[in-house]
Image 1 (cartoon, rainbow, N blue to C red):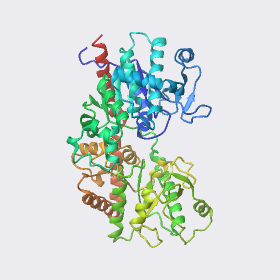
Image 2: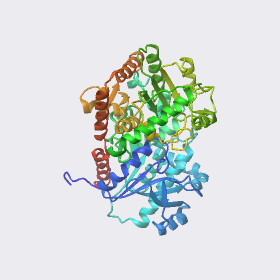
Image 3: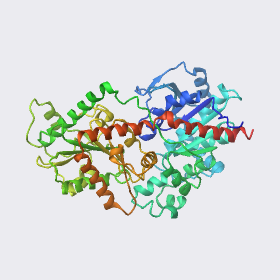
Image 4: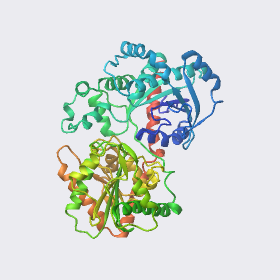
Length: 552
């Protein structure tokens, strides 16, 4: 076929996070859909788990007329209840939400077949493995059923599985429906994340790690087995960054065929005519909450620094961030006031009633609240790592302290009870966003921050940080809009100093310099739109289809 790119007629994209907002994969899929649909020209169907029986899913609009005859068929032949409709995101792609509970009585038989056919070891499964595997198998059954019911033999079909949770289905599709091209994307290897999460040095001893050995040591055998076997047996294996490609090669024993870099869409970023108003509203709300808790009257000249994401204390660099704030505080010589926000969901019990009452008072109070460190009460106040670390570092948020740290341990969905703003509506009010990750296959949080014109800090252990370095031709600086901090297993003190210097640099910047940094952040983010990156997906689909059709 020469240089002609094979394009699929159908794409089935399967993920635990379809219409299920959990983490970064939700962002990948929900922001790519419109561009992928347009670029591929295919019938694009996302398949996810149905956790909303009897309740309204705000992310999903059901359409019972969509594939109605097939839904009856798959119910009768495979015992699956499938809801069809549309994902309420740009592009409004078709969605199948599958109730997989009917498969649990069959799980031992399914696992036995997985061992016989693919050598997938599920003997040591625990936690979420069963749920994920039954969903994955149900997705494969649904696609097989629809393929036989609706799709003609001359139509090209891609089954795209995301993360280990969907690997089992991809293997069964490849075995039983070999005319469907299979693609598997690992967004982060389960064993690599576990190595880091258990405090081991991933990078210093990288070339010595054996994935199977570490899976045994860390009790990760089942997840590692399905991930490794899927990676090795699908038609095309991809991951999201060069740093994770190296990890896959070492720990999964297969080099990815394509690096499908993560993009995003900027439609949720306020346009120029609204931007300053939204930013001002965010800063006003942040400062109102902070002043109510601290008994202060800090104004708009306050330097607001923030971080966010999943509560992975070491992997996401929360430990380094807190240490850098201590270094800033201990050597602080500026007249500026610095407020650091930690927007990381913890084990939240409830929004604080005393904070809510104070926010409703017509006049500010000059007395700090009890425990002015957290906006919400936690179920594990005495065991929480952020609060414990802040206490051990001597942060008290006294009115006279120039550097204060506020923990926001809730999902910022607009209904948290204190800020009542979404994460993005709060993010836009920050001056600098900081994500100095130790383990970060890509890094959506720094990319999103840059898109909101918030100068951002990431690390060179994050895929996004390495990408930034390729764009600017050196290590990114704050003046470039994205600062890339150098991290290794052995340079903790240097990384702390680099972060502290970054904050001090921002404090010392003139208004003109700050505005240039904001513009540079936005420009960099603009280079990471899906319209630039979707080509990698088309390359992966072409490769997978070539494996199938060149062998027919």
